[in-house]
Image (cartoon, rainbow, N blue to C red; front, top):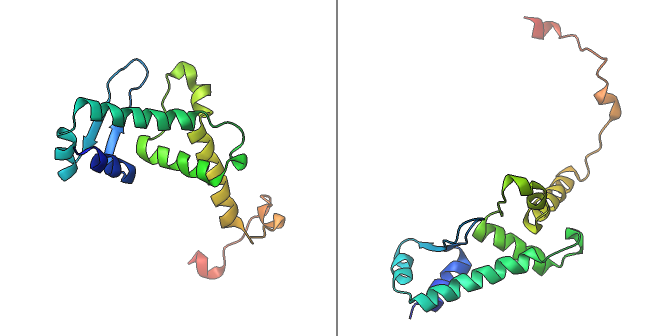
Length: 144
């Protein structure tokens, strides 16, 4: 009855769908305000449909391979939306290398490099400013 309303709220980020971590099988749907009551009135089939939709989105993001530069803008947007909805995937410590190579973490690293490039655009660095052998004497005004 309220499936479409809850789905729309989930797409807007007003409803959270929690997917299980390693070793757990618990799903949850979390909402506040009027959406809380709509979620409470969902049938088991409608809840499962929302969970399946969320799992499908996460699985689709997990299949993204290659360099982030080769992704389409739609794929980048999908990864960003996935991060906003589900956060970053967390793996056991023994799988740290896998965790570092997830599409979400690769996207965030790429995005931060792009932001840094935009910030430094037009900035010219003078190498002589980095000579650590020079000590500056304080001016007489600074010594007071």
